[in-house]
Image (cartoon, rainbow over all chains, first blue to last red):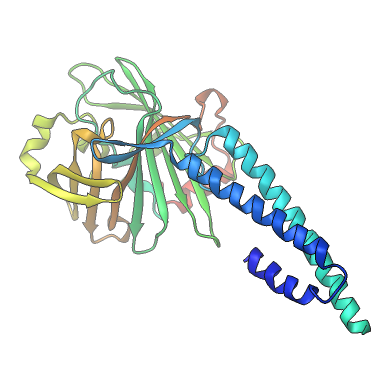
Length: 107
Length: 220
């Protein structure tokens, strides 16, 4: 969703001087999204099979409904940081969109 | 949502001190009213005479997410039936666990009881054996023993495999006239090294919020 939004935004922004900043922003978010996917894939490797049944090591963590239980504490912290960064970039993108709209209104 | 059914979901073959703390099972739970719900059962304490088990019940609905933990401490004395001594409750809204009153520990009157399963030796379950079957569950494919128990108007079909110990249960289908007697539980995955949520040392007396919660959940 975020990438689609930014893609549309970038297409509009190509006509403005702000385009280089947004391209950089887009690349950074894409990189972060890839890192999240890598971490999620890594976390899933903690599961194994026991007699043909899937088995997960919860690594001495409590079971919580909203967090992937199979993710290690270190990975969880890193994912939280990345999610915060993505949120920050998302806010910046929204600010740029607002600025772009203002410019378009003026023209 | 009816959760009193949780109390009879114990499936442990024989009294033994070999229940590894942190091991257990995670199930998908589905009924007519409840979907997208997980139930986890795992060992919190284990010795020759004591066994602690914790349940974690959570719905992942975006509108009404719900999480609840229950922990039960039990004593087993040779030649005596299972003795449930303490129960604790915590929800995502509670800062500390709360102590369940003794009178709330023996529930699901008239239905299939905790003692029907807990510490039931395989020989005791044999009269209820339907046969051995290959079944497909989210955790994989497995050959399991199919049993059926009926009490009053509740019939419970359940499948047990030694490959799914310590809990043993791989699938359960309950049917009955009461709405909360109709549900299906299937093993999603086995688990190890789960940290318990409830520490009885932190537990406080049941407060008004806890009482209202239990009443809402149909505890009498």
